[in-house]
Length: 109
Image (tube, rainbow, N blue to C red):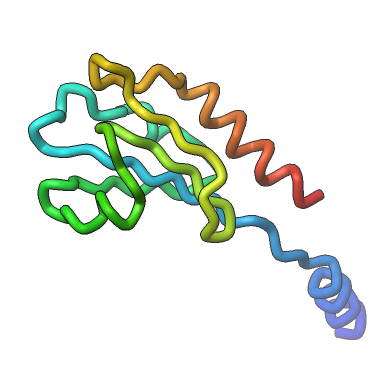
């Protein structure tokens, strides 16, 4: 019993709060052809999708000027923004966004 309590105490003391990374994808139903499908494959972050035809106030709140737009938040603060090109397509690749997510998490160590 004593050994279990010591182990639990060591685990509790070793626990550290790490960054929470959230990737928000803004698009519109009329632009579904350019939806960024690979976002669901990102790891170590949560991914949220917002259709601006359903939530038009988010356009102003997040200063969205082109669709699609991907914004990476770390602990609630915007850290990186990927915006569509003139063809309304995201140039960033899954590897680019995943690398930024990984770097954001590793910066806590």
